[in-house]
Length: 410
Ligand code: PMP
Image (tube, rainbow, N blue to C red; front, side, top):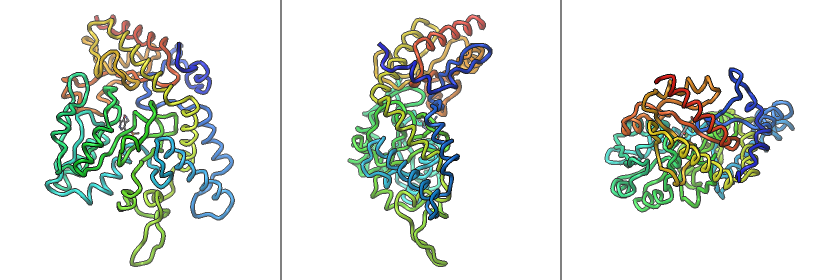
């Protein structure tokens, strides 16, 4: 009763055939970065073999082909996340972190002042938490955090209390990369908008693993990273409502983002190019559109079911042991495709190292959510995260390796 034809999918990912120390790789670090299927690798190679040229400025054939493919990739990614405005609402950036910084600098630094508030949650990734902290420091704005309860849910009463008319921006993560919680971003958008605040949604973990519709959730800004959705590194997307992207000043200046430059002043190019100064990641952008096609061919609803099923299976298996503490929503509750946990007797870093001896790749550390770990009384955790090519057998391998780790430390 598998939701996906995993065996077929795995054929597109030759890296999964690799052996580490004589054992076949079990790759469970997908929340950090996903593997890249042949069609996406081919898209990059084909671009460099057949089309490579700088975009926008050339009238020669290669430049025109590269420009069209790169521009159409924006339309494709807009469509992928439900933005009906096409390329004008889709800025390509390096990653989610750059998208956060773009809005924090281009909007926050100009708009925030003493008395204003930015609301985040206690489960934010450092990419938003640190960025807004810095912008608040520079502008005199205050930061407030929506509390997270012991089961890893946002306290929505607290959210309704601290989002006020002083709030200018609500910046929240859609799916927590540490807890797996799926946050009610649509509800938060409604609360923010009731107070004339904007909402920025960090979709780094949601876009790869579930159908996303930025218009349905009514996000003002929404960010994601290509490398977590079978795309290349060095490319990601920032969605913004068109009128907001039109009103904002650029973040970076230079070639490609201008309409007319005189010694005295300059006017900006159309959206989204106004936000893409300099030569962009052309091959990566084109390959990202291929990644979106690849995921849509499988079907985002089915991917979501597969992810949830693997997470539930992991929770079931880990619950067999009373020395394992699972973070985030409990069994039976819908969650993203990742499970973080701690073992009473073995430090997460030791777990990860021993698991590597068993060719099982997971992540150990604070997963860029240090304040959340502090709050939960942990310095670190181990995280297994899944994707379209993972199986229950691989989770069994994880549990077996955990047994071995426990024995070593007994
Ligand atoms: N937000 C979340 C929820 C993430 O999981 C990550 C990646 N760990 C990021 C932001 C940052 O993504 P990137 O490193 O691609 O900028």
